[in-house]
Amino acid sequence: MLKINNTLTRQKDEFKPQSFPQVTMYTCGVTVYDDCHIGHARSLYIFDVMRRYLKYKGYDVKFVRNITDIDDKIINRAIELKINWQELVKKYIDRYYEDLNALGVEKADFEPRATENIPDMIKYIQTLIDKEFAYASGGDVYFNVRKFSEYGKLSGQKIEEMEAGARISPTGLKKDHLDFALWKASKEGEPFWESPWGNGRPGWHIECSVMSQKFLKTDTLDIHAGGRDLVFPHHENELAQAEAFTGKPFARYWIHHGLLTINGQKMSKSLGNFIIVKDVLSKYPADVLKILYLQALYSSPVDFSWEKMDEAKHAYERFVILFQKINRKFDVIMPEISASNSNDNKFIEEFDRAMADDFNTPMALSVLFNMVNECNKLLDNNASIARQLMITIKQLGNVLGLSFKGAREESSEVWIMDAIGEREKLRKEKKYKEADGVRKMLEEKGIVLEDTKEGTTWRKKL
Ligand SMILES: [Zn+2]
Image 1 (cartoon, rainbow, N blue to C red):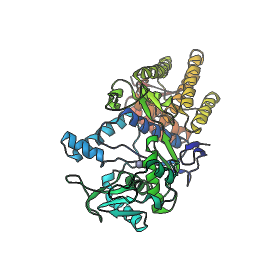
Image 2 (image 1 turned 90 degrees about the horizontal axis):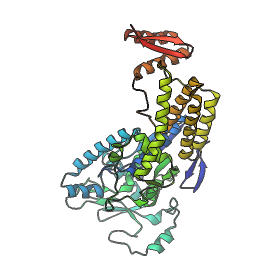
Image 3 (image 1 turned 180 degrees about the horizontal axis):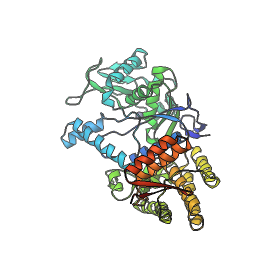
Image 4 (image 1 turned 120 degrees about the vertical axis):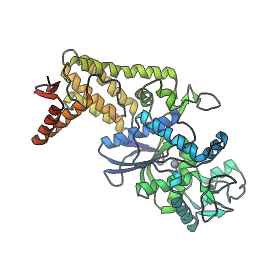
């Protein structure tokens, strides 16, 4: 039973999606005005791990991760660089996908961009006005926070307290200083879209309410996730907009990851400690950065340092060295087919218990290291059991998004292994004709299979 630390209820809740086995999941993605830094990488990666684990547990996860491609930061950066904002956006979307790819973070089912969904946002805003949750004011549109009585429930604040704390009189076009913009009139020279309120662009919060419901095809999401820094005001506002719009709960489980510091300091350009994903991945395999992240609970802060990266690298090498030793033991190359045994099952259960407890990755990772120790002990006298355990390590590692690239012997020819694995699977399903087809296909390519007690081996035809 999976338990999730839910920001909304402030407790660990049992995870029950609305319509099992389907899970709808949305995370707030990047704003594309600069390269992804390692704080973004943590966010992208940790939610990829959650998605992988849910899939591993048999859930059918529908996942949406947006791209914010219009925003003040984008406009300002484009002005600073003296380029067109679309050019800036295109450049950083391309670089974002390079990073995702290098990190081995899977694509979402939908990756909607704000600028491609503006008509939907305009309709949504109009409905909020019609329902009197929002008002137009001089070309802007604002959400009237006082009309939504539950405002503050996600971040655990009361409107009166926010008021008392601030004591700011409403500025300009707002009725109340807590009100936030759904639509902003464009200033001279800024990008704009036509709307019933004049030329302008959407505020940041509205895109997530609109695109999550649109692409997940639901009023109520199972999971909404993001960084802790987004709880207020971004997620509070998303929630207010969506619940005012539908009259239904917006998301059932709100998951927030802790933030990242560098040597104990906040990462910022002015401090000169800004580290982008590309810097790290030019020095270390992605798995090493992932190990550093896995060592902390997702909900806790992570402190990054190059020393910690070196420590993570040493830890990672324990996998690499073991896998190479095992592969060398076997002078024939055999496909990696899992055949669970009781020894492996014990570890699989421990791994699962860790992950089911609010995705406790430090614990899950320590199970993998215990498996490495066990494997090393088995290696001399029980090599085939060690090899089986290695296969299980790789499978569980894969749930954590670890690829162990570079840990594989170079001589292993992956496509042959895949074909042998496929044949084995077909034989287990008693599809002997199809299995024999795979054997013939390999033979035509000069690969001869030999079935032995230890499994199937192959050699090149003489
Ligand atoms: Zn969002």
